[in-house]
Amino acid sequence: MYWNRIRKWPLLIIIAFAVICFSFFQIFYPYHFFFKGQNQLFLMSWQYVGMLLDKPAWVACAVGEFFTQFYYYDWAGAAILTAALTTVLVLTYIVLISLELKKLDYGLSMILAAGVALREASCHLFYGYTLSSTIALIGGLVVFLLLQELLKQKWYWALAAILPGAVLCYWMFGYGVWVFLLLAAITVWKVAVPVALGFACLLPAVRGYYNLTFTDLCQYPGIEKMHVPDFNKETDLHMIHSYQTGDWDDVIKTAKADPVLNSMTVNGQPMKLNMEQSVSSTIRRFIYNLVQAQNGTLPDALLEYYPNYLGTFTSMIGTNIPPLMFMNLNEFYYAIGDIARAERGAFMACVSVPNNRNAYTIKRLAECALIRNDEKAAKKFLKLLRQSIPYRDWADSAGNDERYKQKANFVNLQDSISPSEESHYILTQLVKSNPENLVALDYMLCSDLQKKDIDAFKSDYDAYCTDKPRIKKLYQEALCIWLMKQQASEEEWQKYIKDQQVRNRLKEYMAESRSPRFADTYWFYFDVFNLESN
Image (tube, rainbow, N blue to C red; front, side, top):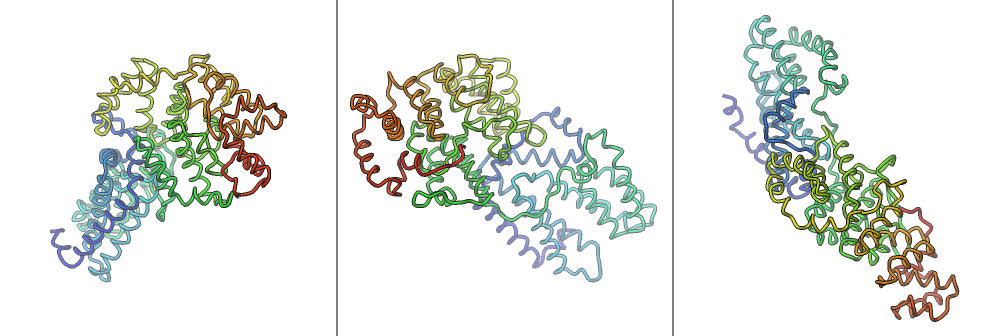
């Protein structure tokens, strides 16, 4: 019956909407899906589904989270969201036609339905909006359609439909109940309006049971304002995704082509960025430097951007850092081999997301347990991941992955109870534990240079590079500064400066001091820039 109402020209609009929706999200917004899929962990167990009963809208959450886990796969996210939004469009159109209002013809009904669907689509442009919220909206429309015939009967039949319908709708679909009550009020307002007011007045009585504020009770699983496309955030998520999946060449390629990063320095002068660009550039520089450090090329990349961001001066505690940066700060500690802090960072990131479930952080906790050879912890986290569809295969094979055994060679063998969060102390411990830990060594030396602390750099270089000199252009240029300050002898110059080209270029720089022609040198950075350390 309902299908017959849309088998005319509106069907073409529905098809066009689906095609445009899928094309947009797949082409321009694919990495938002991967992030949303990571930001929860749906377990294929009845026990997990039972946990959802602790909050309203358990059906919407169960269905939404089940399908969201497939965002992990290419193309699936755009297909699933398109199906959900198209369902909103179709159901809204059917509902509007079924209301049989005089001024609401087929054309106007389709326009209004398209408006509702487009508004819902705009909410999904925000990286924190979930599929469960759209399922809640669909649920409210479905409940109304199921009870619509009873609502058109005498008042007592309408009351018998609205009362249990509202309770059931809220229990299953959360805020979808307001959609149901609104449509019921349009159909039979004399019955629906008093019920809606009474329902709103009684709702605070369940605050203790659901452990939610009144606002959250009314909006669960979530209502969002309209958003415009955030392509800046999409690039952030693109770089994070490429890093996490091991496609480091793509990270470098994306950074090289990134207009935000490439606009930071023009002719050796730093450019001012707006707040949004500043936040994004912080995340992108952090990820880019992680790749360079693990490739052994961090000294070559340090001066590519002014200012640069290493993450070595950022503490996980008591700092106001962007959410995406906070969620990925554990990557820095994991890369340098500080497994204890990587584990803590993963825990804190997991706690910061809705419902404290983040698939990637659970995976990171499992990796940390495997590296520490903590069988009980590893078994616990791997058991969770085995109950998820996207991470099941990884969980089955992780225990035999040689990379984690190799990573164990870089863990901190010093006293892990640090008196401070100061990065230099942490990096020193790691290099002492394993002098072959070049990632930690480069982060330590580059952090010294970023602070322009030449004396600390020279001290660290002597302590850890005397036996195995780290011959990098950046380090050679920094050593030149120390040697000039000390008015060192030619013997000392020959001891430290192994690259004759550096000495030759130093002579040119002394003749053209602070010339933008030398913007790629540490001498220029040391003389010109007076920036806060990152």
